[in-house]
Image 1 (cartoon, rainbow, N blue to C red):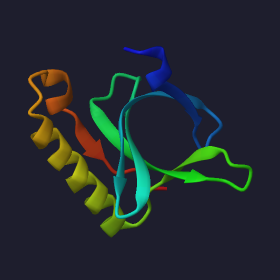
Image 2 (image 1 turned 180 degrees about the horizontal axis):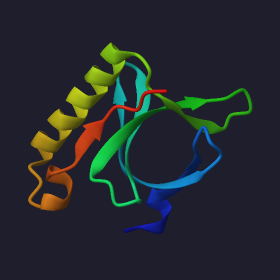
Image 3 (image 1 turned 45 degrees about the horizontal axis):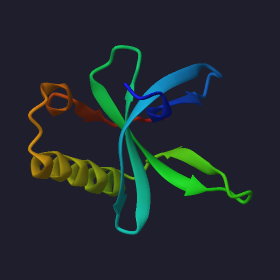
Length: 99
């Protein structure tokens, strides 16, 4: 696991959560990150990457169901296109985060 692919996000309760960035991709003009929590979960999560007023990239939870489904489908298509031989990524399911 490459160290630069690990990021720490703070959840709504103030807890730090480590994620491995699996892939970043553009879908319908927006940038997204598919990430795997390092807590042992095998379900990936999707965040939208947005730039704040200071030019910093921040991760936003995808709240819109259509947007989430479009990104999840694009991720699944990407995995199929890559024809991964490594089972590590083939078995990862994308989980929707709800607030």
